[in-house]
Amino acid sequence: MENASERYNVFVYGTLKDGYWNNRVMTEGGDARKVGDAYTAARYLLYSAGIPYVARLPEVPGPRRLLWPFLGQILGEVWSIDKRSLEACDGLEGNGRYYNREEVPVIILGVEGPRAFAQEAWLYFIMRLPDGLPVRPVDGLLEWDRNKSRHAPDDETSYEEEEA
Image (tube, rainbow, N blue to C red; front, top):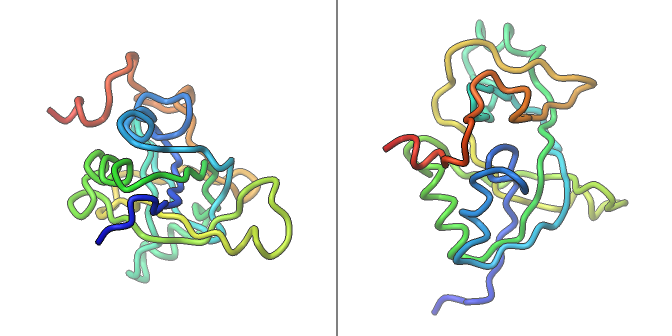
């Protein structure tokens, strides 16, 4: 039997963040609470083509060497959500089709000591690298900002609606 009170930590770095148009996917119809601002313990690649994509460094030696300077810790938010909200996020992100949801260690800002590193959260990784170069980190950190994105939507249309 499923535990109705089960909670999941999700690390969001783009349109699911507080104040962005897809945040309602987590907050409407489910139980979602913002834990706090955070960043990933490991370094990843961040692409921005209107919406952000986080990717792991590819295993291929050539591209791996070229992409090394673009690795950084991703800034975002951690949300504690219920199963219904997790399923809604999986649907929006196309978990298993466009993104893979994987658990990673994150550091929640304002939390000190070993507990800060012990936080695990689900993060959506793009399955196929987008064209172009990723965003270059500033002081080792990567953050997506709608206002700095080259192709940010002008309205409150969700990514899910844009695909239709």
